[in-house]
Amino acid sequence: MKISTKGRYALRVMIDLAINNNGKYISLKEISQRQEISNKYLEQIISLLNKAGYLETARGNMGGYRLSKKPSEYKVGDILRATEGDLAPIYCLTEDGECDKKSNCKTYSFWQGLDNVINEYVDSKTLEDLIK
Image (cartoon, rainbow, N blue to C red; front, side, top):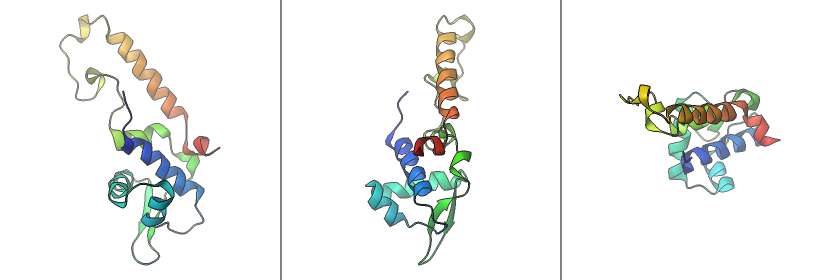
């Protein structure tokens, strides 16, 4: 499993919004400059985070983005899944992954164990943990 730039940048964006939270909305341009992410790419990431319900948005001159919850309420795993999709190391462990060899597969339990470790770890960390 490899986390793409979308997942990595999504964590950076969420941390940026948490660290720079002063109650006001933060513009896309400010986040883009601080994180050195192009506006175009940042819009894609923000869209995914917004769709997941992680952000509050406002339009206009004073518009922008801010977190909809406290940093301690965001699991890293949830943020990664919102941008990456399933974090399973192999296809047959995903929701769509159907394998007729699963019952006789000698490696399935190994991959299932790895999947459990990955998910337990990313779900044990919050945005607040990353900020500290």
